[in-house]
Length: 119
Image (tube, rainbow, N blue to C red):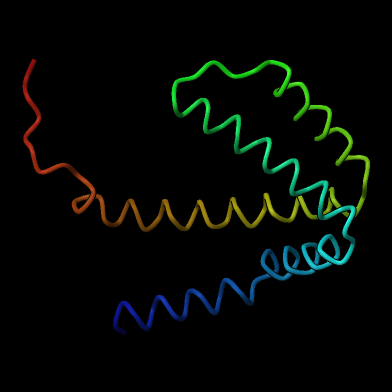
């Protein structure tokens, strides 16, 4: 089978698997409630701001980190949002595992072209 055919088969397998179906259902429940959706969006926005600051080598605002931690604890009190976050985590793990399998198989492609210098 050709790689494109295999990729399409993988896409079908992923969208048909329990992890994806669980995530899609949980996401739909969160998206159906504007207040819950807004809480998750605000949480993600704050997380992204902190991560971008870290990647830029900037010192992360402690108050912002505490705000994210408080918001996360608040989100975890809501069963619908907790279910969504857990389903998202399971699907993310599955995707990461698949990416690792593909990366390991294509290690030669991912290696730099320059030769490593001996120390």
